Image 1 (cartoon, rainbow, N blue to C red):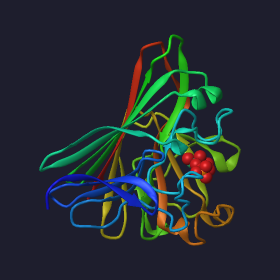
Image 2: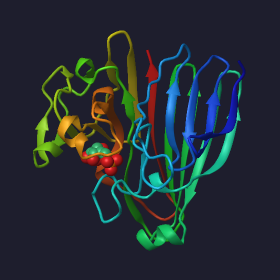
Image 3: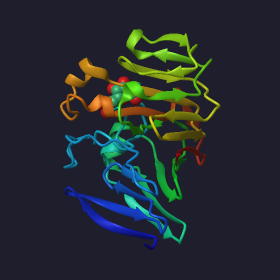
Image 4: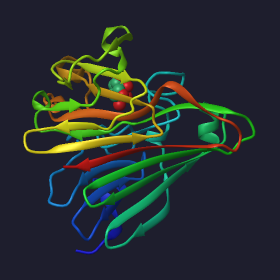
Length: 282
Ligand code: TA6
């Protein structure tokens, strides 16, 4: 196998397939700049894509790695999680060698974005696969003449065989706001996070890498630039309100998101910010 980047049609969505000579693969939709699939060498899908996800560009795609920008969740007046996940991005760079494949997608302000959010910006999402690693980097430049503020996240849906049997390590001691309990701020006191009920937490100022352990495989999760980690699983009742998630879908996913959610990022005119999430299959 050689490294390659090819344009494909993913169930009707224009997309790119990245592959490396060592057998890693990823699929990235231009709608939303959303990574929909990532398989490290040796196989085993690591991202969850709902089998009932809407794939006709009429709604956000449930699964993979949605890009939330310039608003995380409902923390403002924009549509939930901002407009980047429902915008069509353009391909700016494609590069591959024996070891890696890299694409950069871009999104700039337009009449449509400025009516909702009156700022000039240029955003880039770079997607790199190399060996057992997926690296996603979101860069935002303020191309206008006034300061702007945004919140953002890489809303990664990690595939797990059985969420109740998975253990997320590394959040011990950090404070989080608990969205399932009126945003109360709590301190994580467990050695591991076990998801056994609806979970929706924003952990602040997380400085350690995390490890998601399953039966016979693990995933290292690291972030730079993003200060927060969001952990989300809708569980049974919330799932019922999500038409694009099957009844047992929540059992096979856990969102562990790199986020700038607790405090907005402020960019003066001409400034650039970047944040990265790295997943390593172990
Ligand atoms: O990141 C967690 C969260 O904000 C949850 O509160 C939950 O609603 C989730 O995102 C999914 O949002 P969506 O708009 O994609 O259904």
